[in-house]
Image (tube, rainbow, N blue to C red; front, side):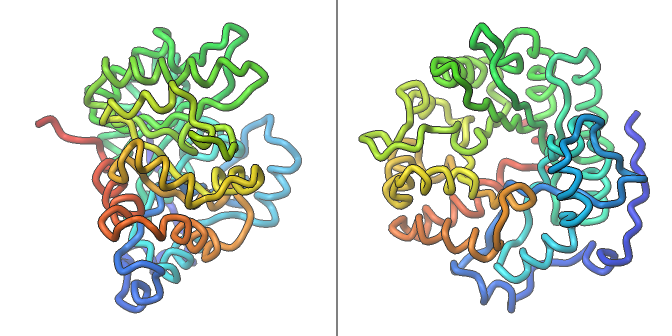
Length: 323
């Protein structure tokens, strides 16, 4: 049983039922509402919400001095025309202790929860069922580095119990297989993801940071053949984030070129946008502007899909009901 703590914070009580105002939409850089699919929340109240025991000193200092609470994000959303979004459990601070995220979402209906659970834990399937029912989560996130074999544990048969539960519940599985010294690991991961997309067709899979393409200004903008082959799986989606944008900029990759190529390969309806606020440092308005500018050559319908409609469609609190 997942017990929901009462979340009492006077600074956000008035925002719990807030909705996007006409004035906020007027400030938006687009003639439509936005959906932020990637935010991280954490609080300096470590007595109620302790950090993971192995949290770094850098993380502890950030939490103490620059907490990312929902009132901050909601203010940024209102100032930039963002209707709603996902709170993605922050591994850096809490690992699989999802209590703060769940309490934030319980108090603020504009937040939808993406939790982190251990993919091979025998208790994860039951926990997903409980969280979908009681906490109305939309999905679960699996991330990490590859094993020496080059395989990512969450993409192996050892994690199939968690995948089967997500499939049964209609939950999104957000994946972040990270780069490593093993250059073959990410292409292998993309192949495995295609296999899982075929096996678990009720699962909408979302690749954080578009699956970490190499920041190269080459003919495929760093997307491997295995990345590109995922286009045939229409239950695989791609999260375009500030984190990825900064990597592309560091590699001197033209952002509009990347967006046009990636959208041309996968389709705009397969993309969601995420600010990565709480992890990437910077000004939220700048995050929105850079992302929107990079997609300026897309049609209005394509931009609406990428920056709102697709995310609002796939991130369903409580999971997608059976047809």
